[in-house]
Length: 270
Image 1 (spheres, one colour):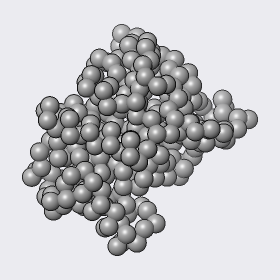
Image 2 (image 1 turned 60 degrees about the vertical axis):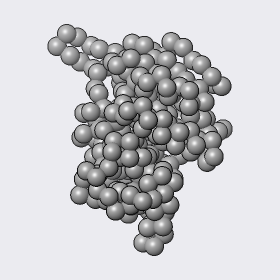
Image 3 (image 1 turned 180 degrees about the horizontal axis):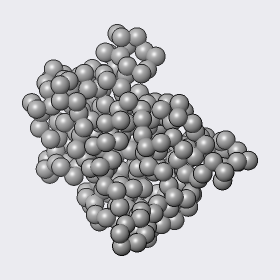
Image 4 (image 1 turned 180 degrees about the vertical axis):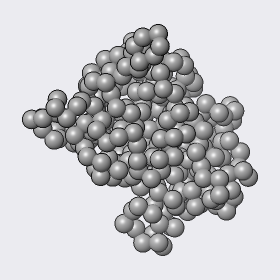
């Protein structure tokens, strides 16, 4: 299966510019003909139906994700749990429009991603989704503040408003005294907090996090998870995080357990 070190390295950097692995996410154009462009979402922020992702390898076809159905409602913090190689990252990548499913559909609010064209998908990634990666993917030549400012260049805010929002977000994750620090001057936990602030810059409908604590020590893990939980509780920020870290489950509103590409258990309020 594809791992996010690949997705984050190539697509993660392209994602900062609103680009991804093609715009048509889901079924082929011929399969999509005659289908409605959108559907009432009734509080559903993210919805997946029958998601399947196959990869062809020298040993045959591998089903990384095998028939996942998932609904995420506004204000939920959903943890997708499972061991390495179970399909978590591939699932998250399809939910975020970074990877095309072999079959199935993904809806972001009213929009079916399979029917979005290139320009619509760019807008989705720039303005409706926020991404946090295990390896941070901060721009090394930019300060913490400049990293958070970067996605705001695509907003309709004035330069003053962009600066004010970026400063407010950096301060919100507890790094108001690190505005002018470069990534090399920050700890791993501080880098991830900057990455969270950057993901929130354009007020996304959903924050998608891939192993957000995977590179962190226990203290930094608690700090980052507390920030995510606070965002969810105080601001009703919708969050989907994939992880093998059992600590994440304690901060989420509910959890799903994935094995061999299938959801085998659901826990919590859902």
